[in-house]
Length: 419
Image (cartoon, rainbow, N blue to C red; front, side):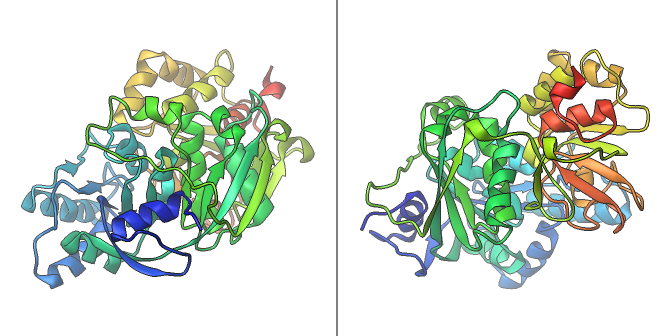
């Protein structure tokens, strides 16, 4: 029996000819990641081991959740990370002015690549599967051990094949695809399973679409989400990734525990209602839902393509007078490109606020916290109760098309309604 993409990467890094679902293995790691929330407790556990870091070039520390620091407590968290990075001369440490949201900048800077095995103390580390790597989130102690040894243990997951067909409509993006999938299989539909995307429809998806889809594999319970290496992937990594890499493809007789089919041609703009990402509904099927806030950004939809989509809809209009619209570029590079393209002027002229790169409101940190009874349309990845503020607030997940249209009209809407 052949292997799929996830199994091939795990087998190679375990030094084995093959692996099978359910098998427990130990793998050598290519990259270990942590942020300002997760690194400090991992550093505390790491120090108990009494060893130096395994490789200062294979660790990335990105203080992005509460930076610029919002208070003394978050400043102390960041200081812990900064001191650790300086002590061990960590190559991939990103400070204020050079920082961005971790899952944006690691791809942008070519730190992760096809065929690599990456773990991170952040659940959305699965984003890097978009470039044909295996990446997944881990806990504090696993990360601490990885910092010292460069190794981690895994149970080889079963794999669900997501077969994509058809042509992607102009008002559809990766967020609509992944929300549709989660709506189909549920938030536990891929629990500790790999999601492997395949089929002719993959070519319809931009790299930004793929980043969004892999990013939210965890919202279906997935261990990871992985895409094949094709011409778009090759074009993206060329000029970014400077080290040698080895892309993988599934064997023709690879095994899957389930196949799910999605015809892109049939997709319509969707939103995920509170309080689960799987509570997906087509916008055309819902009634009028007034909103108070829109957030455009995050590791899910904070890239230049996302901002271009939003700006194209907002241009020539004003943000609804009863709506606060907050735009957060995912990195300094995205911010700079948006400035050069005139996107920031479009947002500001329309009445939106533009923030420095940060996770901010996504996790209820700052830069857009909701009060009781308030509703927000957000391009972030989770809408659990209390995720963005008060437990009686509501978050509706959407892509940049719907978020921008909603900001203009003051209700959940599609671009066609803006005109």
